[in-house]
Image (cartoon, rainbow, N blue to C red; front, side, top):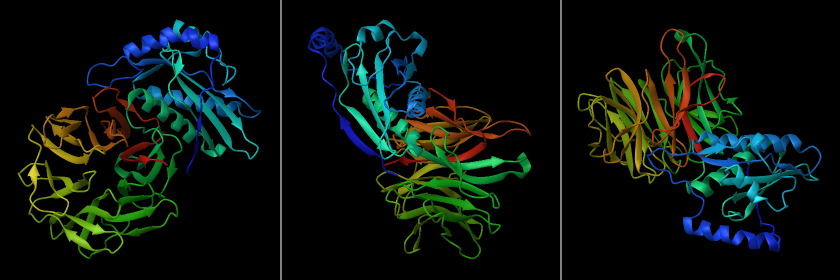
Length: 448
């Protein structure tokens, strides 16, 4: 569902307040705009204040409180922002259009201030307005925004507000209003029930897509977020299926006798699926045109070739292969052809996934009994390990290429998989808060 977006121009300040703000604004200009520069070093989170949005009509109080909470949670989850507790506030925001008492927010060291309001329109829709303020410059940062949408999707509106704040301060593309498809697991470790599920990126709004009657693995979102590829054991052997999220309809993509298919991914335009097919004891990579069913073989070696992933421009494919004797990462043209190895560190490499920015490849690495999620440049240089544990695997990228989600498995008979996120700098390792064991995440695109 698309949201309606309207610009809200900042209300003019009283002349006396505007005059008082000039020296501060000049000082802000001298030191640069409010901005978090994201580097690989230690980053001190930016302190911000987000008073509960003003309720402008009866019945809007709960929405105002909940939307504010989600905005704060989104920003805090990045590790780049630190919320100032409400108990420290000196000023209270009682009207969205009233002048902001910047001195009161400076006094508690807030560098950014988020103000907003929520109203219920005559047609029942929510109307949310908000502004982002640079406290030390004593001025709003750009124009505010207004969102108009049904109450049922209030969380999406909150994510949109957080996305706008995040992008304005960091200069990065947004990612909060996105979803993740994954495998929800239940039951004992030796007899797991695995169901496809989808959720918001923060773990909310979990919805099951399959009933658990057949084992499912490796779901993958389409580039537009409308479809999901996955592998099912419904017939007793791995087989790739395509699920339409709007209709719930699904179909097998390939059913060639004597073969098994797995590890599918979409091309950037969503028209092609690249996957592995095993036939006669040999596993190679193939590409299928979804509309016509036409299949092309991309590799032809006696080794195991799997886990293909397209580059964002669709010209190349990264994949894993043991053609050198151990599991390593290779890149080849999207039409097939000569492949070049890019992983040369100690250990084994697998599950490579190209960043949506095109500059990095995420991977799983196993070395000396430990598993890692790492990233490297597309030429194999600048390898950086972001995590280490008993079992970390299966990275997937946020839509803006700043965050990686992956599966972490705990030890022992009672061990269970969970989803974690980590920034590409290796900071801010966090567990995704969902009430089920979970594995095989695939992060979808930013929602329209």
